[in-house]
Image (cartoon, rainbow, N blue to C red; front, side, top):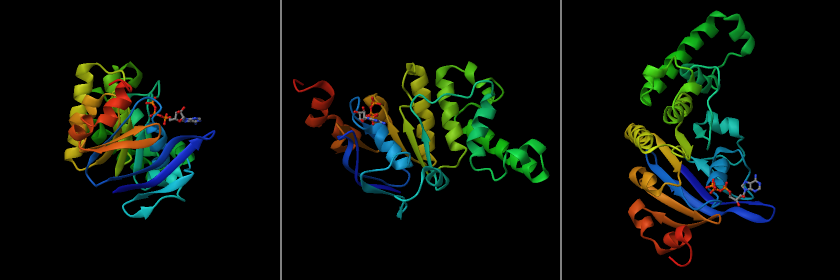
Length: 251
Ligand SMILES: Nc1ncnc2c1ncn2[C@@H]1O[C@H](COP(=O)(O)OP(=O)(O)OP(=O)(O)O)[C@@H](O)[C@H]1O
């Protein structure tokens, strides 16, 4: 599904991502872990087309994306839930999710304002797809609640629903569990497990190695921009290079 090959990107002469190659087969959940500053978010931005690489290539289902800008990669099926993403204040949970589907809507603001017939039909379809996305993340009962008044765990699931509304083929999740309490983490993990069961291909950046290990089929570990280990969660957790990167050279 996703193939990243020899990807590099430097800032001010320092590599944030250095010669990274990985593959994510369709339907798998791929974990990306590593200490602070390892290059995880930069790698996501390179895959989503929000940053240009200095070298290397990204392809989705065999199509090379290197010359494709971010908005066309989104249309091709790559969705990203950003680290620390916020909900739109003043909008209900359902409206927040509908914003995700509006990125795919064909009708513009003027048509929307005039509520033209075709636009109204499109609006109904968007509403239906937003309700279905809310159902997939277990937030149906919260549809009419102002999104900003939801507990953090539910806000994260609403952001996930917003990304799902765009019908992604590859979903990139940057630290979706950061700051969540144990029970909230656990229900988020259950939602991600359900999405994997449905066959959605995902990449997950997390600091919580236990959270990633529970969910991921394969894990890539970055340190200082480079891949230091990759494999199943249990193989990677026992890898001395990973232990050293996480705990320091005395580990
Ligand atoms: N836009 C930028 N300009 C300059 N340096 C950057 C930029 N983005 C990232 N970096 C640097 O690149 C390196 C990798 O950063 P990145 O945010 O990708 O790491 P990360 O693994 O996601 O870290 P964290 O776990 O703390 O979110 C860091 O040294 C960071 O300071």
